[in-house]
Image 1 (cartoon, rainbow, N blue to C red):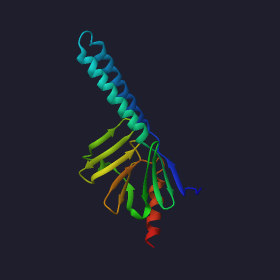
Image 2 (image 1 turned 135 degrees about the vertical axis):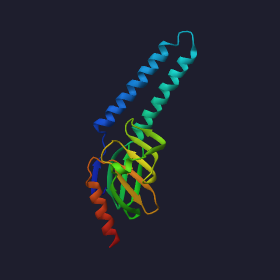
Image 3 (image 1 turned 180 degrees about the vertical axis):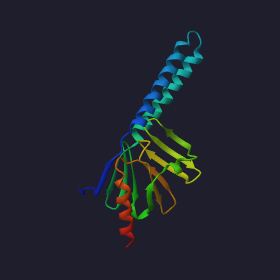
Image 4 (image 1 turned 60 degrees about the vertical axis):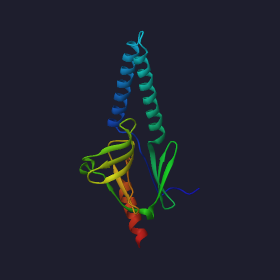
Length: 174
């Protein structure tokens, strides 16, 4: 088994943990309130059940899809979650850079989960256009641009990943 030449974790930061806890408490309180109000009326009870199931599905989706580590192995950048892994060949990466505050301006979620256990899904922004965001934290966002014009945002604990991939891209061009 070959060892990775670079590896780092992707863990939730304090802000993401607080968002997750806040959303959980808000859903729990709302569900409890609706359940308490459902004496002889089934509508609030049904709404409470639907809300609970929706939140549960979002949490399961988040737990299994949120990235937990990044690895560079055999010329590939591997974005690993608990359920799947996304593999991007280094030769296919055009550039990689820090996703800064200007990039976040006008960021709109098209489809995905935001805040609970991280940000996962398809987004758009006025500066970058369409992108896939696979982050487990609100900090250390990194933008990967591929040669086929795909844009992927990740959030490694160690931002040295940017320098490491940049060097690999330069060396592949030689």
